[in-house]
Length: 248
Image (cartoon, rainbow, N blue to C red; front, side):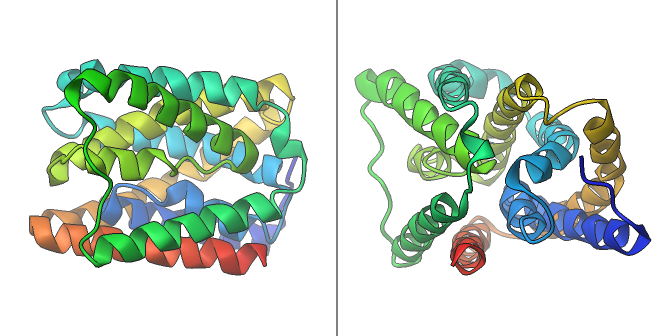
């Protein structure tokens, strides 16, 4: 369990505040930023355990903010089920060093963001194939989550390929990430990385994460659909470059 002194506590609190702010604007980024920074101070599994409650609560908040939850849950349940399966299959992977996994994850984000900024995007799956594609995407996302604690790829590009509007996209991300966080928490609990002590420390990080997210959401509300897309892709590019730099 990570036991910080006062200085480390302030640093970790700021990490969660900044990560929450990025999540508020983009609808994502809290685990990516937090894990990239926390990896400088502690093992991956301990950082992921700190992330559980801030990630879960902020994603539940994001998931509930909008009127599309029921329709999104009906549409995305194969992907959400796949995430749980993938995390279960990859349980224990996080105990191994995650440097290479983080680098490849970052490179994929950079390539995807550059393609998006150039106006390219993944094709939308045909209606008759969507459930099967969703299940595969979810399983791959779960496997990467089990290895890195970051649940971005390939779920985020897939959700964007569905052509969701700004608020639908943010709510779909919250739903996907909430399920991913619960699956990850179960895997960490089974390996005893998430326990009473780490849960208490994770709870302390909830306030700075929520404050940052609230401020970020105020900014997102002022963005147009096109501005949101530009911020979203630019944020993915920055997050990917950050992971590559951290894992080099």
